[in-house]
Length: 66
Image 1 (spheres, rainbow, N blue to C red):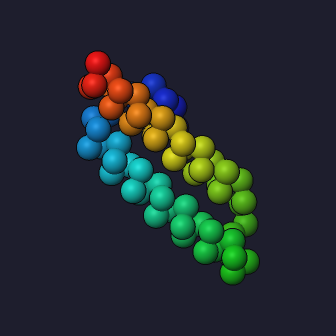
Image 2: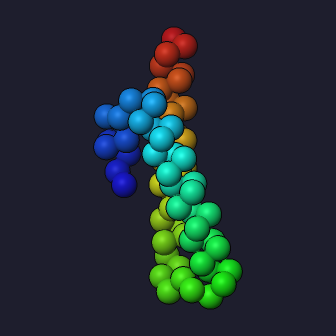
Image 3: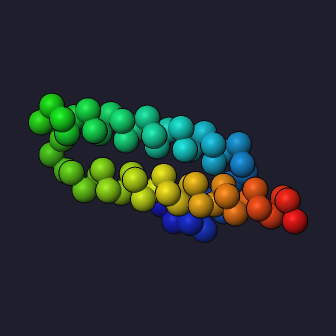
């Protein structure tokens, strides 16, 4: 997921995307713990996507304060 795509989203859409990514990461961790996850790179990708969403949310909130 690209940061430019995230910047085009509204704050509410970003919050929904964040919740979706966190739920997905939880499921991936569960699959990993039970030995069902074949592609462990997905864990890293989801963590980075969550960080990107949080960064863009923070940027939007800081702009709103200025």
